[in-house]
Figure 1 (tube, rainbow, N blue to C red):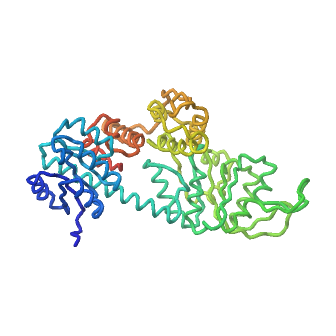
Figure 2 (spheres, rainbow, N blue to C red):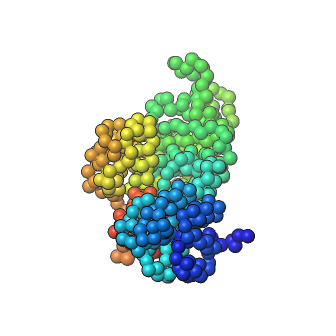
Figure 3 (cartoon, rainbow, N blue to C red):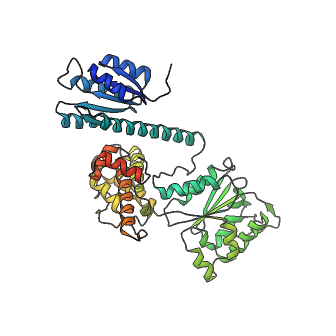
Length: 456
């Protein structure tokens, strides 16, 4: 019968040490294995979350060949297990080799029970976090992606995501404010997909991209013969969004004459096509976006205040890419995989100088600029890795201005958080590689993650 405790497999041939470790780990359901055959049988049957492995196993107790054979076999059977290796034979070299092959951590013999206990406890915590993340990811996949496919690991965007999740089921009008290329349309799709209207149409129109004399017809539609060239009756974007969501991108560019007609629709929820006289009822949710400073436009009288408050029942500010530490690297890797698969399968990743350049660049064009640079690099490069030269980045770009800290302690914490998030993104969450990038030990990194409430 299961004890209900987390399962810990100890692969160790020394009977004295077996008993000592089993006694020391009373908080866990400890299973002992002294040979490769027994260990693999336990892994197959019990699926332990954490495993300690002595590399010096028989028939090679004075070497490491049998231990590495066990490591390889266990990784193949249960790749998500956290394996902590021990060795007294060339410990440093063996440890590095084991980490390269997928081990979680290592400790050197003779065993310090307290030190090993801390490593085991951290391994269980990390395994539980990964299990929970996979569960949440699966749940999002089963439901609907709140962010419409947006990729982020930054707390700044996580806050935006939580706001989207809370507002989506309501019917309030949402105003997305942010620079061009920050992903406002993806967020608008996220609002639609997480709402009760997700089975209806998501209709988008860029108000800045359509000439003023055509915008009214695009929004409200027109009747046959309403103007030269109107050879048939055509419904507008508002009408096409009936039962769904209408996304008005760059709403700040709507001419004042049209602002009046849009306001009337929002008040009465009916429209009249250009050249028409019959009111048409339309049930649609409005999500709009702009990069312009609407408060300034309100003061200047170029944007109607009553329209603004109709459109902006809830305002969501979208941060620039430079204000989302670590996201540039995550997004770059995502774009590379996508474009390489489509256009240049030889490309396998980024060179270190490219990752450094991506981290340090200010990204004035935000995600759109990043996507375009990666796409061009994938197409044009002759090598297997993308370099900073391929991206046309020299690595000297400013990372963007952030709010200045008011004291040295706050500034240090802000810098620590930023660097840790960037290192985690570069190493794809691998703790060992993240610690190496930061030039600190794994325990120190864990302490910092806990201190700043950051997730691997």
